[in-house]
Image (tube, rainbow, N blue to C red; front, side, top):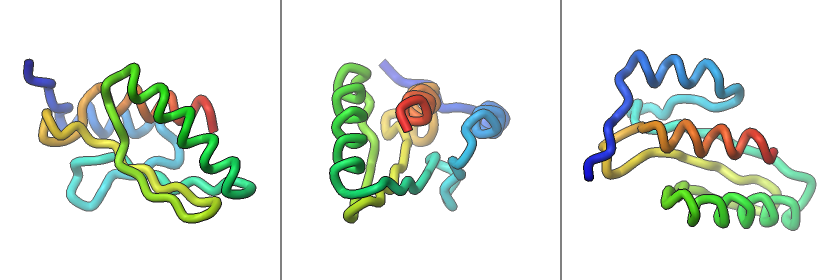
Length: 96
């Protein structure tokens, strides 16, 4: 089953409700860089997101160095952003 890609208008509207998130240069992903108190906090955050992502069957692209985590959300099956990315960004915002 194909996952519908957000229109540019839907994408832009969703981004308004996601403070701190930016649109990637290619316009296909939401991105954010988060900073935590230490590695343990960053890893704990990643663990919580991983558990949720597994249940949602939607996994972020991310990069971690010590207390910083860069997150990129995109839906490969949609060829860009979908409602899954909006929901994942909202979940992440809720636990940060």
